[in-house]
Length: 406
Ligand SMILES: *Cc1c(COP(=O)(O)O)cnc(C)c1O
Image 1 (cartoon, rainbow, N blue to C red):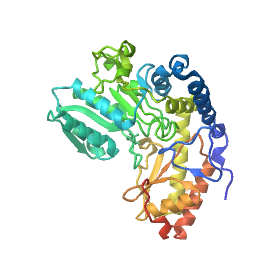
Image 2: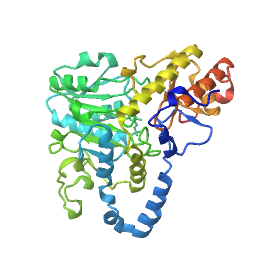
Image 3: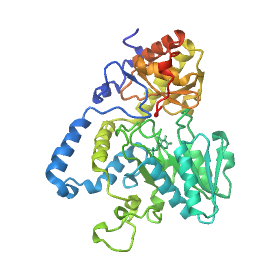
Image 4: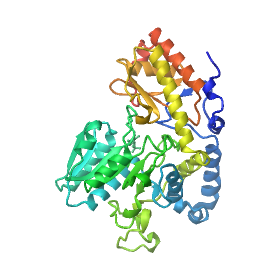
């Protein structure tokens, strides 16, 4: 087994691995599902809990500026997704943020009734859209087409185009700029879910003129299990969106305790309730890792890792059927394959120290995170995959019993 790989020489991101606390002997190909613990986060949490909470108590809201954490963390994320400062907040979950931005977008297009999405979208986005449509009861239609049919389905009846840029299952990547322009040309608004984009590849929300965006804090941003999500509102909508969840933290003056709701100016109005200071602090600290990371450099390494994995698997594991686009320009930072016994295969891989995940009915998914993976890791992972497939090591009952979370 190679311990070094020529492609790892002169890797500008090689030193970043030490910024993470990875368990010994694990090759982690699941940073697209739950990012790895950044090594400095436990100390930061210790400080937030013992000092800030323990000693400052209620004074912490002012003394440690907990109250503005959603905007502060939002600004750190903004840099990674091509958004101007003051246009992003870290808050709530992605599902809740989908609800918030979709309701806000529909209210900006009251005369139109069609929401367009695709069947590669993550189910929660579609469930939320469907639930919101029922709740509004204003005759909206949720139109779901195949990903490659989205462009042709954009017409003059469209209120909102709501897509996930990178397909969670296959890694297929939409052309955000072109589709947003087409939606705008038809008089519609565009919402982008960046769950598998933020921290994985360069995103240019401002350049694409996206109207709204949401995304996850616990995937490539490494904020920890259930970390707060984020939400973007384009500058032109900041002062005219009507927040659908009118909580006191989105009020212009929460501590005036007025009985009437008045939205805050700017992105602050998309806040709802009291921010989760502990989990926001973990995400805040985790994001520091990106401070000196050039996203185009990260993307170059991501493509290189994915290309190596793909070519090694195709050469050595012919049983697996590629489920991702072959062209790296049309992919995010993951490679997926179909295999009839995909669940058992993934369980066997995990038992051998290669952690990826499984998406029903038959997809094994491998995420590539350039900040803590090397090309040598990729080759070692394929060595193990090949051993498991040729020896049918997955074909054991212990690997076939499905657990709650796959
Ligand atoms: C991971 C993911 C989510 C998760 O939403 P939560 O509310 O955090 O559970 C939503 N949308 C997409 C596209 C995702 O990939």
